Image 1 (cartoon, rainbow, N blue to C red):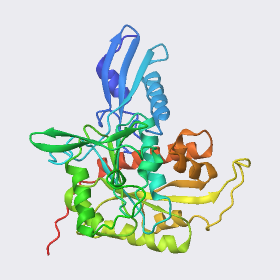
Image 2: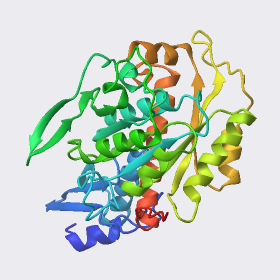
Image 3: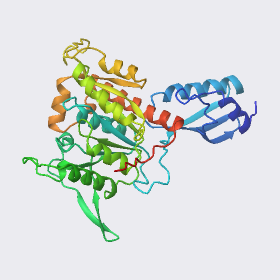
Image 4: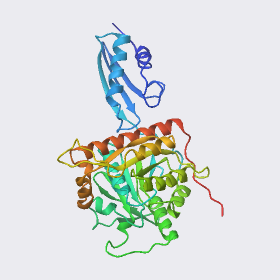
Length: 364
């Protein structure tokens, strides 16, 4: 049986992207169709390399071709990706596709650990990733990435000093911790911290990135306002633990981004320290801080629940040794890898369904 490009597109127009709820042809995800006799090859361009539905989409394409063109067609599908963005014509960070704020209402919920492992998991999937550690009260990214002794280099571009970020585990890093001695307390006034964040955004050579994560200080502060006034943020991720006091504070963080004048989309809620699992008893779950508080918070505000991260001794050890837990086989690797897929998925849905975020203008 002979067939042409139009028939191939007609067949593939019956395959829907499960998240974006449109067919692959309409979404422009089918490219490079080549036909030679009964051999067919084409490219499927996914919205992220961390797509959890890669195999589902591929199998649906194979099924659609067989149903429409017959079982004797030899099909070769190349799965690739091009991360979507709504950040076009932006003077600041023009080559950065998505900026994701990682926030928490209170300290001690493992926000920086989550941000670090999320960044590495996204990089492991094949994405280009950067991480800004804007947590002035406790910059922990240098420790978690085992780069405490390193200092970013500086180069001159058109008479201006540009900082070269440190790169580790496939992630480009900038941290307030690189600028201050680790063993001495540094007192930051709000404007100083805000100007440091502005510098990390405007004066660092980030280059091309699919995702730039910003690890914010706990609570709601000057730094949060500086961020939304400086750059359009694709979306925010809220990290909480299950207990009541953490959820109350996480609610404040979530509602801050939802204020009409700020209006940053919430990509979802992560429940960290969801349960304790001993390494030697991986099937046992002990709910030390309560159960499913993060899930209920997400339901209350009608935002996605991105996943649960367990308490496992190796996560703490990984933070101390500077070798992220996502590299170690076991439940932590699975949890952080699935988290990266969930976040990437919500970014793609947000970019397809919502208009771009505007920079906040605050009067006064």
